[in-house]
Image 1 (cartoon, rainbow, N blue to C red):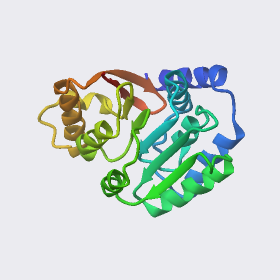
Image 2 (image 1 turned 30 degrees about the vertical axis):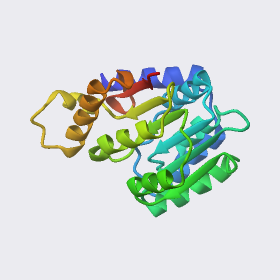
Image 3 (image 1 turned 45 degrees about the vertical axis):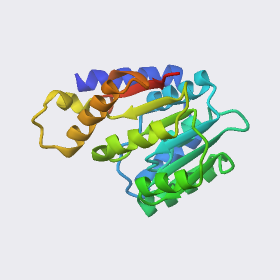
Image 4 (image 1 turned 180 degrees about the horizontal axis):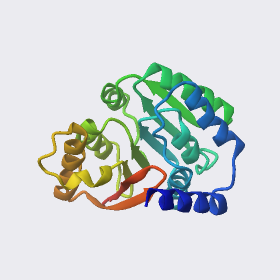
Length: 221
């Protein structure tokens, strides 16, 4: 099945996500810098871009930058006055991301903040950062519950919250899992289910990255 998933991914990408030299160069730069090859796929990047456009988002928060592949996809969906703040723990990853953002000509739209995301989020609260229109959570999964708490704090009615890697090859149904990533995602689900402020669902995906999925929610009035 994996071979079929990859072939379907290639078919979708070829038809609906035409070859983009800049994005191709971003992935090459990430590999040369030995970044983990865990970027979203091209079709998933296009999905994020479409969600930015469909929601009319102008202010985006991304928790987990890596090499800024997903960041660039989302930034391209923003209007002229749109902006992204993206948080990256690892200094090397952040430097690669900044170079990729410059390569894409998006320096004016994207601010990369380097260091512990939870510390940055607390600092942003002190700065009285205005609410975001869309928040993409794609960092260390054990901290997903804490990231969700901050995402809700930086939201307004209508804010879209997206969580990546929330299926984990189906392991999320194992309540006895000793994997802290699985338990982090399970708690993430439970918090959403128990919170009347957010309406959400999860979409399972298969493709070149295997079996996984997104959580997509909207903050209620």
